[in-house]
Length: 94
Image 1: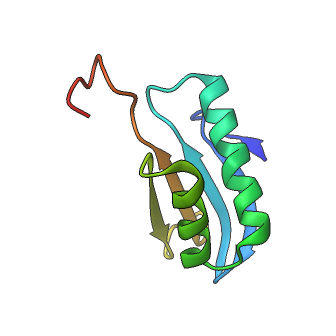
Image 2: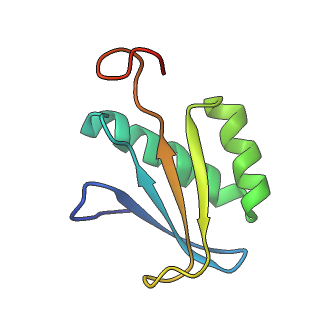
């Protein structure tokens, strides 16, 4: 896992035509993002397709994230996993 300049975490993942998984968590602490990235990395080790990964993450984490497929990204085909913002300020209705 590599921490990127924007604070996201990049995980190498060669499966289903993708080269990596980027883990993002706006409005989350570094500790929360690192814990989330570890959960994603652990699930990615055992689940070798996007659908298997999505299902495994939903089982482990519920509906606390989005998984976005970017097949034609200039940085290479990648998945972006975004941890939802926490409830409360600044998003009381989330």
